[in-house]
Length: 245
Image 1: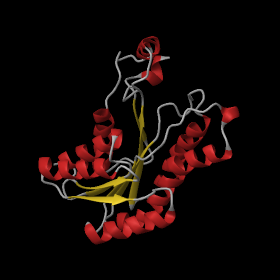
Image 2: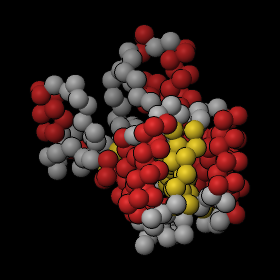
Image 3: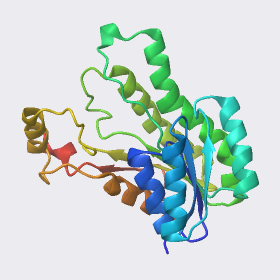
């Protein structure tokens, strides 16, 4: 099994893409630390599913991944329950649609805290455990649109752009003890309120002609958690949209 003997902490893994990553890691042989901020019931369900379906060990930590005091506590809980870490996946994020001129200081700070500052704190505080199990791995979830930004998501794009740069900076600084990479999702998890017209326009720009699935992102994360000669790279999972116009 590709991730046998690994212990991986996935932030924001109660729902959506994070949940798929947690399940994929367990199916690949890893023990998994599931994280949530508020969705405890959903997170407990993921823990139960991992144990029941794969037989791997799983634990739950709850807290705000963008607050140092919460992350310090969660790291201590991980050390106590799991005995260490070999991998960290910074998946937790928020994605508010706000016009630039309507973005408040609070809006901007909240998005930066969740999407950039949180991964910074989690990576920094998990680092001793990752180094102890060298080579450790960090995988950040960025976005295919870094460099080709969405309209009305200025705070989100600034945060994800920063996370993409942080990925490369940490890859250089932490080598060879920790490998640091990113996965940049394209169109996955189609929004329920998406109009038929906009759906057609989006699909028309994807060479593979369809939306992706959370499992596509999870598969890429599993690869990077198991890779031994890859660092500082971003694996874009977008059905070819980056080249599709």
